[in-house]
Image (cartoon, rainbow, N blue to C red):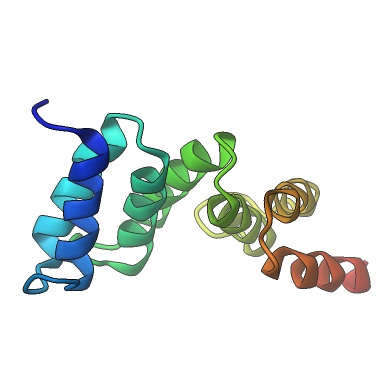
Length: 126
């Protein structure tokens, strides 16, 4: 793989979102995936976003979950939240509220403000 993986991620993000360049989600996804494979955590999260929303690639929630989980295991706050959400709602995985709570707590510890309301929601549902 050529080039700096972090720079590849930034180029992918810019292409995917149209920041400073003409928006090109397919090219953005390809660049983000290259950076994700080089273990850039933010790119791993971004690939999950692309796959879950169908940005530049066909929607694949199961693969999205895998990328979110990779980034979450490295402490990415939004990835932790998304893993918790997937477990809470049973998106691409079997519903597991204990694992949802675990990942929401990790998201909260990492600084994700939305995790607090998710934990309260689950607590009130119990």
